[in-house]
Image (cartoon, rainbow, N blue to C red; front, side, top):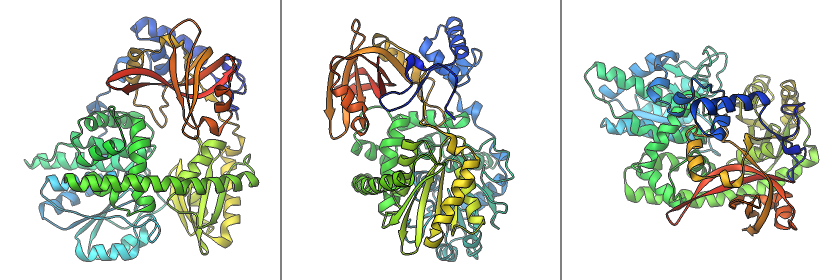
Length: 586
């Protein structure tokens, strides 16, 4: 169903240049925002953002200045936290050999780096093990766990392990702790502890935590227990840059404690103390203070590149090293692999789009599969399919008769649970994940029935009812009102990301003064209302839609412009820039 069906189109835009309907705030939200502005003296655009996020007048001040100490839950609310923390402390005090088994994505890398850094700060060296995506696949496997158990007393599985009954049973002679956030099954592996807010017997109150958040909570509890023994643990506040990176890169909702963790983590990252992140930021050409955008689109993809198409442990090694030379080498390697990953992704993306379009883009599931598609990029391509169709999407690459795939979902549709059900029904070799993302392995002869069954399950959740995604706008704004000062105040309601979208503004009836293609598909624009100051804008991928050609050849027409405001820093000077997302003829 279309969002807010029955409401009038914002600025009368029912089909923009990207074929989207513009939806503005409800009359009730407008009234609440105006009342908040009057009572608090906060700018109206900021109040509109706060109201959209459900913030009341009474809570506005606290929301704008969130304190981690007020929002951080007691770690003990998570089941198995006590045995996990106690066994971890026992291993540290007894100088036992500890191995960290992590997933190969950013959440796994940051989770591993958290443990390795904490242990190093306590004078303890841990073994890092991250499986190869192609040769070993996701999560613990029996040969690796058997080998680690022979040489270690404790194995800590991070961002994986909740469904790994067999591999954990194979770790004979070693104890195992699981710190994870992926959807749990009806039974748990037989081990010391499975700390996971998405276990079936959990309340779900902390289901939004990523694995790095779970690891951080365990270290909070460990430090607390050590203090009771007059032992001082490391300063965990300095670890929050890793927690923020894992949270944003794993697209965890920026709500509740996650918002506070990321907000404080960005401040820690701005100090540039962690050598690996400093080197990666420099090679990524980050010339401003870190934001959730830079974590999700500059740093995250580079750290992920090792697990996707290179050595799986590169990201975790970068995040945990203290050596300047090693950090520089690893950052350069990851940057190179990320460039290579983009080239591979472009090829797979083109083939997947063609295949999915031929199959049909209006059903409850969009999917594509082919021989030779690199398993390291299928998740990214699935995300692109999901974004372009507003449908859950699955992309699978086959090597022989076995296919490894990845899926991405839309809001309100639980893909992970459906994938897990397919595995239980025998249509998949294995599969699991969480609501918005999942992985799977399928045999070639089961591909069609598996996708048909998945489509059926997703349709029951309403996936087939979605039309083109509406463009939701917070309010109107004139170009002259878009100032650096206003944006700074709006940023106080952030950080923005999953489940906490940055405010999007519409600029009505604007004249285009300058429009130029940048690179292959981007567009730079300067516009105004014809009376006040001009506003610069950048539109990425503009020429992948009708947006680029229409604005470049505007012919003097006026357009409504829509997008998100940001501060652009160049040559030490700050200016306002609109990240243009859509436009419509006025």
